[in-house]
Length: 587
Image 1 (cartoon, rainbow, N blue to C red):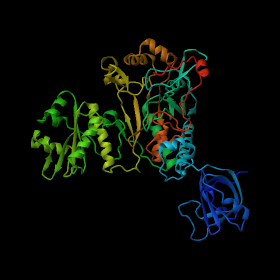
Image 2: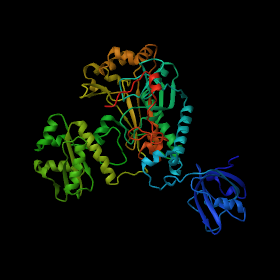
Image 3: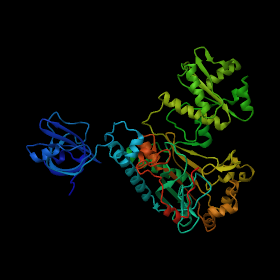
Image 4: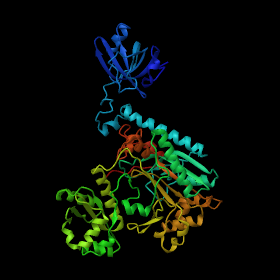
């Protein structure tokens, strides 16, 4: 038997008990003829003591122990001498008096200390990920991840959901992100695709009569990576039949509130607040607003239209927007600092950033001469300007205005310390547009995906004014992060065909890519809908880390490389020949 107990689980209830522990040498100390080892396993640390009066041979052997040696010790649990307790450790009141030691394996000197507070480059951490994962703080993320997955399964099982697996080798689809392709050896010249999500299969399961489906599933997207993206990631994927949007929202917020409470003791409000997509953009400049602080955007189009400032007035006359926000207490910024804010706005797509400072005597800025005093007073009142505030304005197309001011709002919220990191503010964003127009491709594209159902009352606009059509779609947002999104699906093949046509997907292409779904919809498909939560992002939020790489056991870099295994890598010529693939020559 390698162990009777875990290191971090030993307490005073185990006094005088002989136990066997196995783990890694965390650190070693020699004091007054005694050798002390902090022994570590996944449950924590415990102090073990090697005393020559108990065993001279064991004490002598302990002198050879080094960091990260794997050892087994047997001994009795005792209280630490008075005054030597460690209040920072759960096991800090006891120690193990060792009578037997077995060195199970030795270790080279690690490239970094296995300590939580050690500053380690990410490159080094990912190259030696097996060592990084030994660090207690890192292991806590994955213990949290395990608890979260168990809590989700427990809740959904109790609600009558069935966990059903869907294929990893499927067919490439034309919408969404780029697919990862897998060549078929048995079918020359053809390819599987790794699924971006189980969307089509879970709809097929609803047609099949399974009623309530879920899985905690791997998804794959071959896209350019950022800190919050990985080529492979995990979703909590759900689908339900004979259910409407209101029922889905209530059930899903109960799921999230329950698991947050059980796993982290976090109490979320009930019911979750709701904003329409239009309201979220209008007030926060984002469809995933962080509502932990104010600094809301204000519409200034009417004031701009009545002003003498040609830049503002022309934008409004051409159908654009003029909006502003109040950077509280930032009137003391220098011209150079305001110039930096302007450059930040330009980097987000704005042509510039207008500003005014609020003083005891009124508004001050070069552009104030274009506004009559009553308009300046109205402007100040709209933005709730007080002496010491800095008012910021952007005039442009609606999307640019919202992108720029929404981004500035977040950066100012952090700069002004307005965000309480201990607060969790969830909300639903609803009533998304079904489509948007892509100027580059000169066609309509789906906001969510091609299978989201239009609002019943907006169906007539599918032919006359497609951009007016709202989707039965919804996103759950938490602290400015999209936690999950979903929709009621199209369950009638004639409506699905209309949406495909609007998206520029021909009948032939639709049949080629989605023929099995379109055919299934003709065999009594029930009304259905669902949602998918970003499991990695959820864990990152709960763990208080910025990147999902911190909560994925073996993540890739921003270039999609695994530094530990050095994937992706070359394969030999025989494998390529079997797959009917010929490598292109490098130029």
